[in-house]
Image (tube, rainbow, N blue to C red):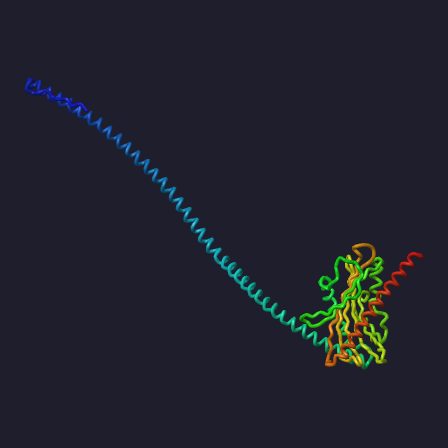
Length: 378
């Protein structure tokens, strides 16, 4: 801004001084006015710029407020949605947790119940076995008395046949374990004579007989002949066959009497109930039998329970067929304090075993030889 200094009035005349004074004053006023106008313009520009900045800041703040408001609304909406979802899902989760807890509790209770039942069954199984043994012995004595009085099998015999046939199924499943422990070499095909051994275990005393025979005939013919001779057709005295059986083509159930006259003239007699079944497998045939022998007359009270297994298989070392036999007898002598009748009865049993074995062996050879000769002549 430029300021004009007015001339001193003393250097001018009065009239001129007045004119000069007015002129100078007007010039000075105009100058001041122009200066003021220039200052106002700059101030106005500053104000405009300040207003622009404030407006810009206001616009930015307005945008930030709008953005933050939208963000707040989104968060509030998400929060509300989450609360609604939690409120909706909470009962479902509780239901599943409750269901799962009940399932686990039910399973634990079921396992505990099964454990108790298993323990009870194991305990009852022992009791049932003992009870069956007592009942079987009672039935056997009753059947023996009935046979002696009537001479034919009764309803008691029928029940005993059913029980014996059921036992044979269990004995069949023991075949492999029996021959692993009986003393015969599993890989051999050499013929042996009957080997007798007295065995003692927790169940008491038993007598075991084992034998192997190598027959020079084919497998199919040998199986058929051995099964035919297993019917013990040479035992015909007072014979009664039981026909009410399943699978009669592979099952035998019969009862007969065996007698023997001693050199001094006395006669021994026993009654035998015999049950046998054939099991055909892919590479072998298994015969399983069970017999109950009861002494009569002077051998009254002498009893023996017999179980037997016979495995027929093709020879692994050459031609022919191998027949292996394992038989076990358990004495069940009742009310006998005198060893004389017991020894007499045991000797009688050994004679019966030898006779049966010899009859089956000779009969098998005769049948097989006859079949072979028939094939040659044909």
